[in-house]
Image (tube, rainbow, N blue to C red; front, top):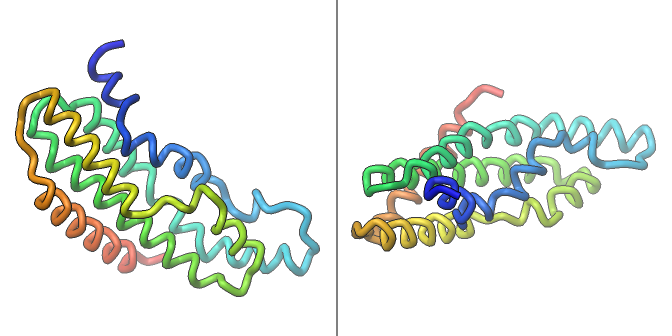
Length: 167
């Protein structure tokens, strides 16, 4: 295994979002089974409300994977922080979207399942772990406080951008 592949496979950040990414691409109404017709209509209507929030992650994760592959010096650090922050902002947007469908019990149960338990702090922890490992391997310094600040700035900006998009 070459060094680039090793970085991708050992990335704590990317590994922590793997299960989430596997599930977020599924349309909720297609996953929930055994509903009566009236409940199915409510689930489909609620799924339509949240579905746009499901579709915002793939591009960001693809960029994160490329950054992990290219992580051979400190030049990639600002990009990786930005991408992780954008992912966190999109995660925040999904959580905000799910708050709009509280009246649909089936969807509340669906969004309460394990795959949606990923938190912004998990993304930040994975980011910091990756950057600590890479900086130790490649011999460049990192500033944890600056990483946290930039991560929060990008998360806030990403969340605001998602709110502004027409749906």
